[in-house]
Image (cartoon, one colour):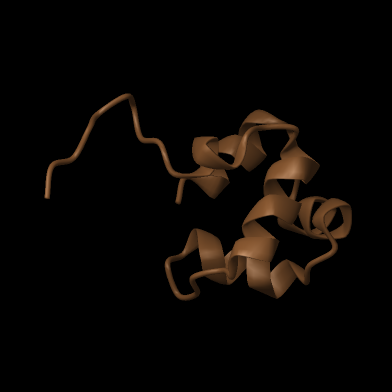
Length: 67
């Protein structure tokens, strides 16, 4: 996920984003560090808090990946 990039782009701390999204700061930290994969409901909460579509949390520099 590109959560850190989006969060910092919005000028938010992990704690501020956590409060806006209704999740713990530690959860935001774990997601950013790849230690936790959030459930879909959390993805939507975080996307709403950042005012971005959920897909924006998963896009990297327009590069596409093939399986």
